[in-house]
Length: 213
Image 1 (cartoon, one colour):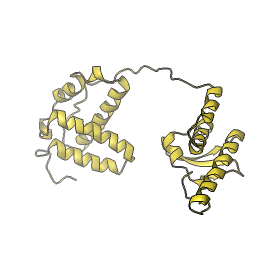
Image 2 (image 1 turned 90 degrees about the vertical axis):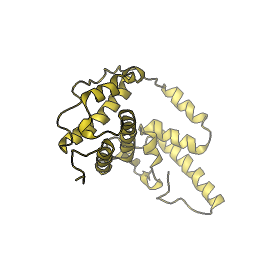
Image 3 (image 1 turned 135 degrees about the horizontal axis):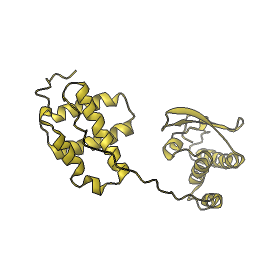
Image 4 (image 1 turned 120 degrees about the horizontal axis):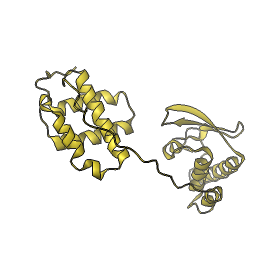
């Protein structure tokens, strides 16, 4: 619990307390995004006593041009960050009521994303800058994993005999086994042979299971 009473609590104190709690609840990327939003929130409203924070502060923060300059999705993410913080303040009895009651999420338009055809995807392999990039692209197009999740893969996660790749899916926070297709099997074997030859030429080492793929 905070050493300060709700009467004397400053906005910056409440933010620090909230982010300390969130650090134990969410991943670093989520915490970083929330921190960025709340730093802007503090800078624009000013470090006032929390008891002096009003619904007008919140309305002005969101509707003084911000709603026009941000994409609906970005606006809604920022809204969610502030809403979570203010709800925390209510639970801690730093605020007496909901200050977000006049703020509404913006309607998001579902846009059609560009999708490459199978032939275009395969063509990417032939123009890859190096063998590593070719292997990376092959894993991406055959598993659908995000770039960050692919970067976390280790050599030991690949089981060519079983035809599986063990991976951690960060978005859903689950471990999964992705099948290795015939095309991916060929590309992984090509990359691992190149990887091992490079290591032997440079460091005289064999590939280790804990090395990044």
